[in-house]
Amino acid sequence: MNAYVIRGVSVLGAEPSDLLVRDGKVAEVGPRLSARGAELIDASGLVALPGLVDLHTHLREPGREDAETVETGSRAAALGGYTAVCAMANTSPVADTAGVVEQVTNGVAVRMAVLYLLLGGSSDDTTFDPIDEEA
Image 1 (cartoon, rainbow, N blue to C red):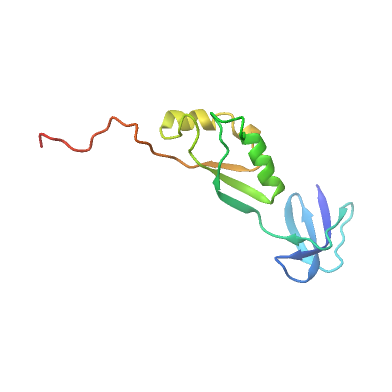
Image 2 (cartoon, one colour):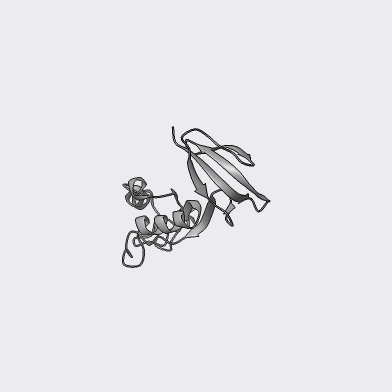
């Protein structure tokens, strides 16, 4: 079991307090907390918030890995307090078909530092014509 006492943190901007975290979950909030074997972390002056979600992320993979990759973008998000990102479909090829979405998402999970959600896209490149001239 991993345990941490985060000392002097401002939870959601409130007065400084302590957080006891066990196995990755907040177990207790209060003053002067302690737990046997817990690692003590001084968080004086810091604020504890729930994980953030970025609803408009440009990870650029596939097609523009020179600008950003799934791995580098997700690591940056995690360092900024984000626990999930919603990746835009502006990749090359555009994630506008099931095949491309599968190509984009295959193997992504093992390289992500946060939860990865791919937003689908649409494009003008279609052969579907909803108007039946003979009807």
